[in-house]
Amino acid sequence: MAQTAKKAPATKKAASKATDTGGNRKADDLRAKTDDQLDTQLVDLKREQFNLRFQSATNQLERPARIREVRREIARIKTLQGERAKAAQPAAAK
Image 1 (cartoon, rainbow, N blue to C red):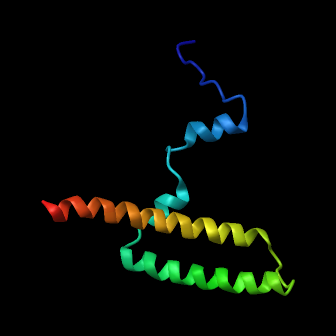
Image 2: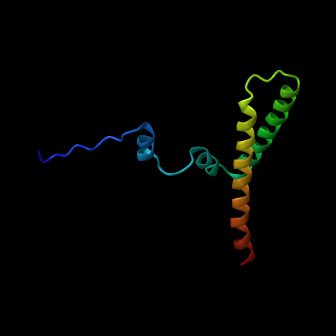
Image 3: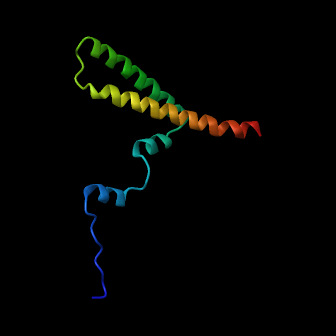
């Protein structure tokens, strides 16, 4: 009886929290990319957003939720670019 069994989490949400590293996977993936890769991905996403708006206007859009996904991905990239620019700014001023 020296061994004690670990208690399993009561819910799926608790189970995912137990294994979660505390970061956002999408943001972590973006942080691993270089500035040039982010710029390229941003251009691609803006082009996709443009095409999705046209599809929406002509009622040919298959996945309306994709508009929201693309918009949020663009925001993630712009946020990361802003963070990097802000971090680089004080270093250049010194």
